[in-house]
Image (cartoon, rainbow, N blue to C red):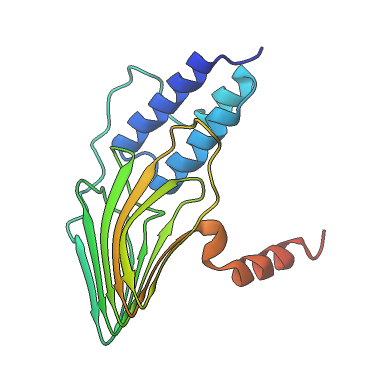
Length: 196
């Protein structure tokens, strides 16, 4: 039986609640939200939520809060994979160094992440899940601000990453999983499929 728009929206809300409870990472929330909007039948919608408790089930405790919110690199490197619950803005500051923030494993109860990124003669790279919306503001002086993400379908209410980026002789880049390491991804895919 074909699914209705109202049924798709109900599944998206159920996914959002599961994310708030810490059952889904930011990456999983984004993937499943996109799949819900693309679902044609009720069976496809049911498949998206088969591993989640039913509506009205006792709630789970939220994921632990991401305590560290400022990530800095001064003439060095800082690589962080965020896995906690993001309740407020994050800050990335790079001065003659590199900061890499990986948001794919984060818990995002509101469906929105705000990052303030500053790169002075250095680089800030933010890795987001495939399918999120990225809103970039700020300025670049003798540097670059760049977003390389796959666009989500029109009208889809997918999670949003808002980045306020300031680059002075440096770069601020936002990439999704698909564009993060394309060579490594191609090699991995080839290795898995070589015997098939």
